[in-house]
View 1: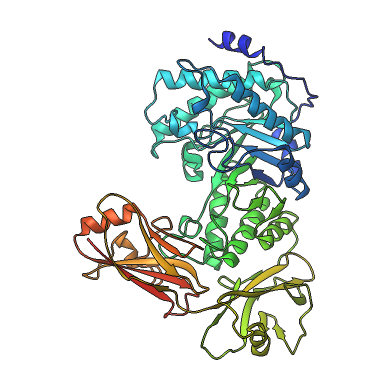
View 2 (view 1 turned 45 degrees about the vertical axis):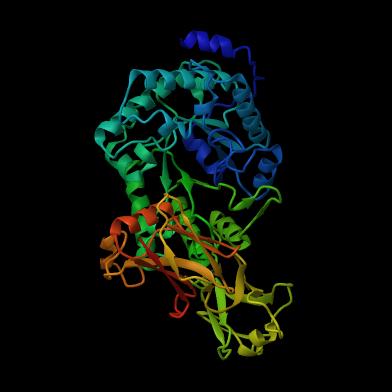
Length: 547
């Protein structure tokens, strides 16, 4: 089968590129930092179906931001010819075009097999058919890309799927060996090409326990890759964990990476994906800035190359700018090992409540040895120290008179301005100033639909932003994850984002799964939607759902 496929693919001739043999050890310093072209060629069933398409200029733009490498996830599942394991030539051509665009920019490129891992190659239930399809796929990919430069790296499989057992991990260890054998014997430059291998689920704990380290010999030039989405509760806004940045938070990240470094000493390692969800919506921005800064610096300490996961929510591929400009700055300087001044968790926004006496507002800052260079308004004009703000070693305080000046008569609720805090080095911090009052709903009682649909709740946000949601049954018990009763009060009974959501069009949403739980509870449930700032206990909207 393999020789037939290679012969067929020879018809799609590729132009040979110069190839300078190298090793992962030699390549790693030149690859940092990296970025993922996420939700694009990996979309199901095809490119564009998740809102993103690839273009040559996106690689030009990301390179201009200082990035040295890109990971190009590709899902092949829906691009096989009917009835066999041959990749549709049109899809193979498209993948090659996108890879060539990235290589033409001088970027390192990781090409992989992505959501196939769970769509058909879940090896918790191994079959001969799965193994043959995996072999056929990589035989075709390896042949088609065999003459690309040394900057192209093959990644066997993204986040190998299946339950967390040694038997499943061993099935993927065997698949990694199969992959290495295919690549090394596929001709062209592939005998000397760098490869990237992942543990079960891309999970570092499973990798530490069960990953098989291929010995020297025919398996040389492989590297190790794991993914880093930790802690889950913060990054996915689960169980009320809306802030990150304590010493304990940092220690947990450090220890997780230290464990990997200790288990893979001397093996070039990459973090193929890391990132948060939606800065400023699902995740509080100052906490996101702190998390990215610390993760990047810790990874660099251990010699890991990092690839930020971006599904289109972070880097604006049309404009070539970061949607959260402060986050873009924070990452840039962290990669360069330049110290950033960062806001304390929860301090990316200054909240001014309608009807309250306007008072001075302090933005807590971590200077980390930096010094304040100035505070500016959104138009770039410097604020006057002493009159419009004061500064200390722990923050900047905006004077009540300055905040009052932003509230012209009739000023609508919402953002009323921004300030930019500049230090002698590192990122500029863009701080939002928001005028708000407690959101309101026209109806606070609903009957749970029995059709398995979600529930949309009209709301007037009044300048506020949703932080989390707490769900309690009529008898006072917790609707979901009752173990959260042992968490701090600010987390007990809270749901996970996607159980609930909101949009700027003034709609709160409860998912169909939560409504099913309410039906099963056979009693009314009160969902309390908690808005920023969470220190304001009146900034909560309760909605009762009857079963």
